[in-house]
Length: 85
Image (tube, rainbow, N blue to C red):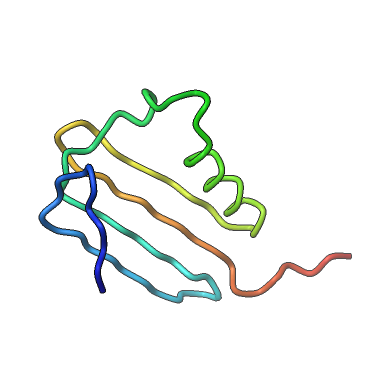
């Protein structure tokens, strides 16, 4: 698998994929330069759209990053749809 590191300047990227209790879990972590998520552009749509798309699917998108410490992204999506009554 080729994972672009782009601006992150990462030398390692770890991707973990698992299915547990009917939920798909994906974790991506790098050792790049990281960034301050609170300093992202307010007019930007990328992270906001990712969170909303996962929420719409009943899942969750989380991002942890700190300058100089790399970035970790965790995503979960239920593989079964909740029953609607």
